[in-house]
Length: 267
Image 1 (cartoon, one colour):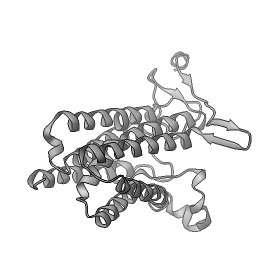
Image 2: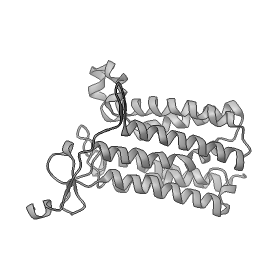
Image 3: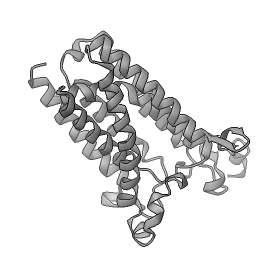
């Protein structure tokens, strides 16, 4: 094992990306800012060029979606991943800067924002979700890279030379599962969905892009969870699966149902 360690990299990046005296911006915050700006601008382009939608609609949606991500992500983490702790430390639910966000909780928050936008502007719900699905994987990629830089949400122990020692994970090499997620849930998903949208007729069916997004994200995340360290306060739950895998199983089923509904409904 010692000979393998000689080839292992140790990751210990500074979590602060920009330090201007009293103003500090972390890599994680920077990834959120860049990801949101990109998604917003790209969504504006799609809305105008492909759906003939007013920019006000996208602006309104993103304002609501940001709140949905923050509130839903935080409450999702509190309720699903660490309820016992936060039930005894209620004030710390507000300490978002200390970490602890759930993707699936944030997803629920975004869906609520999508429903609200659809009703307010009388636009088909699945058109809003398609635009979102085409833009957000880029942000996922940046977010997971930031997780890697922070040395958090690391993978399970491995003896493979690809393993990396994360200071928060002890002196044993682990899978860089954050990079696996950045590549598959971010880059590959973004590229694949946009290639389908621009070069096939699948875009003619509202909801197909959404269904594929939900299905593939759920599938990628489910598989990568086998390499990711389970949350210590939860461990393995149902059928030796993590909570993330259980939730992603629901996503896979939801994605298939969305594809079925969109394929039998008119545009």
